[in-house]
Length: 381
Image 1 (tube, rainbow, N blue to C red):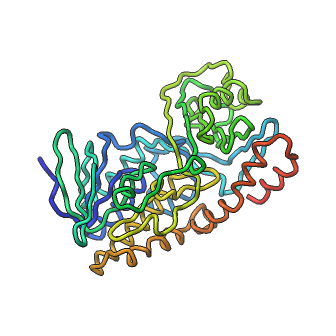
Image 2: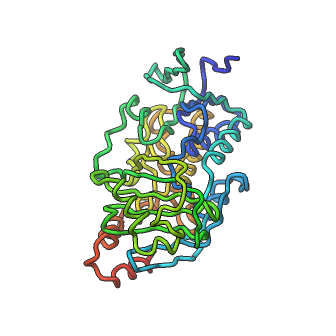
């Protein structure tokens, strides 16, 4: 049965956490909303380390469910070769998720609130028509066009919505990191209650990670400057990094099974300015707006908070019968004022992160810099 109508108040492109929470926020206010997802299976494949901070559920209103929580995390260990910093305050605790289940859970919530969701369908074009937007949607060999007042771009770093609305710009090589991750099983994790983050000269402008998902499974990955080789970096992490076998038994001997190898890119340049994420009838959320924590590249909660903020702004705009750029620009203020990681406002946390980012990576990717400098930096986190 064809559930697609010709007109909607709000259309959301992308059913990741940002898109789904924007959709739910709109739908629960009885507004006619469509969410378009190009994948047949939401949440797959997983291009994410799947770590969240412990405050996500209370800060987003999402109910904690054991179906998608794989491991409780009681702290974060930061490594610089033989230096180890064990951070156990609330801000460094959290959970690892199963994004395949988590993303489906969020999308289902939006449907339960009355949203229309179409999967296996791709937005392939968009143009302005008066005060509305016309979106071309391809499903199989069929192309249809729908009309909407507001479009929320949740389409990740590809940013097609931004391109079609002529507010986006190409990412420069210094504005994103290139990532490669292995999802492994049959490993013996000796410390599965910590996020493990590794810095080294071999991980330029980035880091490596081991995020446990139980006692025998983990996500192991690297994110580095795109001019360098991720295969070399992950090989160094898994086989040569000092002390890696103290975290995963016989990691350096390869005594584990790789279930998946996934790569991708993530923005690290800090949030785009308002003119690059908002225009008449358009708002960008999550990765497409570069709303990603600039030091750790943690993107799940910032994406969700930006989605909620965009959804709230869309609701007010539809109710006021005005969705021009000036009205929708409230979104840029809204997401910045969302509470984040227990003690911060999201915008303030990002501003602080951008202020120290360059020095942080300089200190943690250069052996010539003294240990005291790293200890001082860690003490201020």
